[in-house]
Amino acid sequence: MIEVIRAEIIGDNYQVGDITTGSLPGLCIKLLAAGFDPEASVECYRPGREAWDIRAKSIRAAARLAIAGNGVGFRVVGASPVSDQPQPGDGQPSEPEAHGRASTPRGSEGQP
Figure 1 (cartoon, one colour):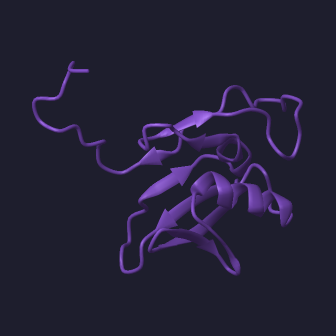
Figure 2 (cartoon, one colour):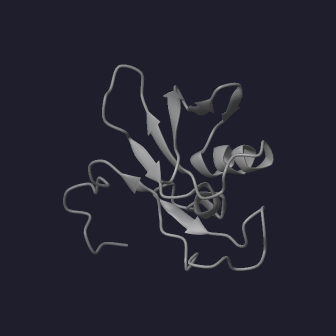
């Protein structure tokens, strides 16, 4: 069974124990450096909520991501800090899942 790590979102920071940073990919890089299982998933919660706000299927996959240039979503930036070689069953990392939908201002669809 894959381990699930619970992270807190406090303000603009993601935190697991004493490990704190400003992004989910950054948190996952620090978790890998601290020796956490690369295959563990991370669920991030805001205090007082029972449902997660963002989830990464594995620390390894999320550590390969960076915040997209437009500030919405993520983009793959390269190899995992744990290994630059593909892992068995690793495939392409998927983006973290987020509750809700990305907001698009009304009337802005298809406009530059």
